[in-house]
Amino acid sequence: MKLTPKKNGTELTIQLSGELNTLTAPELSNLLNKELSGVQTLTLDFAECDYVSSAGLRVLLATFKQMKAVKGSMQLSNVGENFKDVLKNTGLDAVFGVF
Image (tube, rainbow, N blue to C red; front, side, top):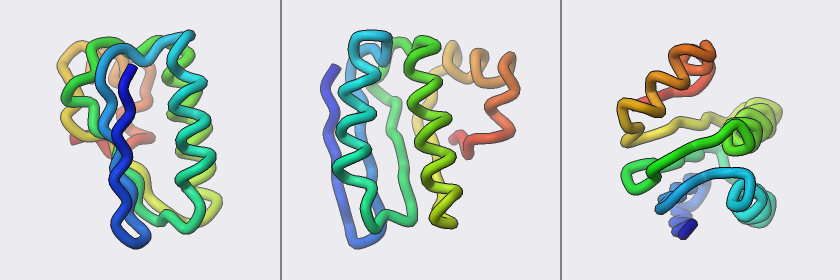
């Protein structure tokens, strides 16, 4: 997995490339732990992400809770149809801003 963060003031966008799975979810978690300080708007760009496992979903939920705790926002962009289906089937499409 390749993670490309771009910070602009209180906004952080992370582009994910590859698979977000059991092996790579800790990489995203570690990057978020380093980069989230002072962030109010987080966008995770899934345009080049091929797969998201339950381990990846756990990282996303934990991050959502962190952002909510600081009254920030988190959205998922460029979500593919398969991932949209997973989010819909789990009810997480109502939790995350998805576009």
